Amino acid sequence: MKTRSRWIISSIAAAIVVGYSAWTFRGPIALSLISAAMERRSQIEPHREITWSSGVDGQARSLGARPPNIVLILADDLGWNDITLNGGVAKGTVPTPNIDSIAQQGVTFTNGYAANGTCAPSRAAIMSGRYGTRFGFEFTPTPPGMMQLMSLMPRDSSRLRDGIRHEAAEVLDYDDMGMPPSEITLAEVLAERDYHTVHIGKWHLGRSNGMAPTDQGFDESLLMASGLYLPEDHPDVVNSKQDFDPIDRFLWAAMRFGVSFNTNDAFEPDRYLTDYFTEHAVDVIEANRDRPFFLYLAHWAPHTPLQALREDYDALSHIDNHRERVYAAMIRSLDRGVGRVLEALRNNGLEDNTLVLFTSDNGGAGYLGLPEVNSPFRGWKITLFEGGIHVPFLAKWPARIAPGTVIDSPVHHFDLYTTAAAAGGAALPDDRKIDGVDLLPFVTGEAEGVPHRSLFWRSGASQSALVDGWKLNVSDPPGRRWLFDLNADPTEQRDLSDERPDKLAELTAALAKHNAEQAPPAWPSQLSAPVNIDKDLSQPDAPDDEYIYWSN
Image 1 (spheres, rainbow, N blue to C red):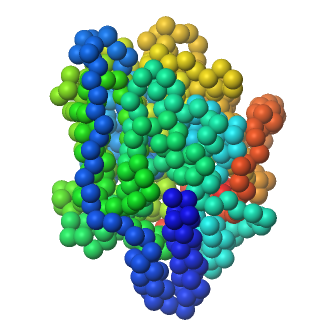
Image 2: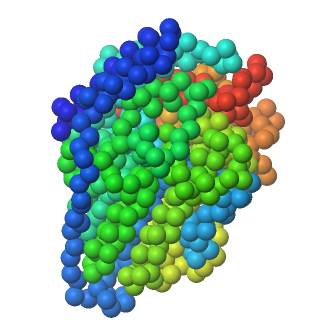
Image 3: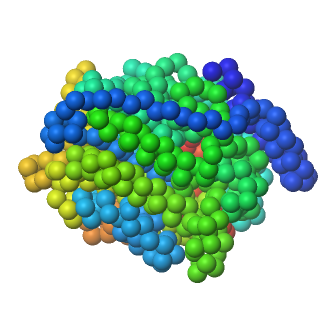
């Protein structure tokens, strides 16, 4: 498994490097060579059917006779403004009634925070209940050669700042970068309470040395093996390629359409990827209706590459911008999938006794070229400004949570771990610091105060602290600090670092104290890249733009 995975990932990286060299002369020729090489090497087998395990619990049909089922739905790169609860794509003209219904029938956490501005560290916090930096999970795993390539690429004339390459003595293999098996995952905790545990979709927490889903407490795993939603030339797909983003062009050439089930043998799904994951989530619910289960449904949507089903695209003819229309169609399919999962719970008599959790791994990406994706917040994925980490954060459990509940206190991804464990009656590990808090008592009014007075984020050059409503953003390079009073300025418009040196010193000290408790990165950062805070990648830089550096 490990050798083959290394071979595939290395071939991708090699193809990209070759593509970069040829790009200087004529990109399309290089891209066709990459595509041909990957077609030969990726070894995606034809579609195969999956049979999910099922079980019988004699008390299952009696209310209260078993712990609640737990369904955690994680979107990928879903922006704050992507659901109509918070505004919606294309000025709210793309309804997301099913996602919104989780809040309407349960609770919305208006200040829900991702654990990081990129995907994998957030997933590590969700699965461990801890800051990923406690065990060295600081940077997002990337294929070998990817970061070096980015540092070598010729800068577009509209980009005014260079990335900074970091030389490392050794870079771990892609599959070796992950959450160590010494961490006790949410699946492992719930398994102690006889939950059947299933993972569907993205993982991104390592595949070797005991880090694969089935080694980390999941009984079954339907894993996303590559990144296409459908083959590029499929008659039912509509694609959008961002020419202003060079990496997007390489990824289109390198990615394939494939999944794997409990093994490393990749095969083609039989439909659009979001719908495929949804249908199997429904199958899992039906197969496990007679025993308690934990379903971790980690959708790829709406992460790039931008690919939509033609029927979803055609339904949104009022959107003139092709890129936005494709993206909106992807949101439409994601919402449809959430609706199918909720419907399956109802149809199987499981709705009342199921805790459904919904969030995104980070904010919407600036490299999409969609300026309103995180509106009204500043920043994007790959920043610690609110646009990068302020995410939809919803839950419903009809047996325990009153409809329409709203919690304004800051909550964090690692709270999902603790809340789900408490709901299932599972004991938390007592041999380590667990950072998450059980949110249910705050939702029901049983607990006073707030879940967290302080929260922290770190990805090399970019770091942040949130303490009693005051937020410090640090970027070094370029040696810049921003201070915001989120109670009065939730969209980070007014930097108070000069006006409030007392608060600046207080939060700086809090961040330093937090960092002193964290482990060093388990693998090194290879590149610190500049990210414009207020302009998406389709817009040119200006000399007075504010920006951060992000290490990965």
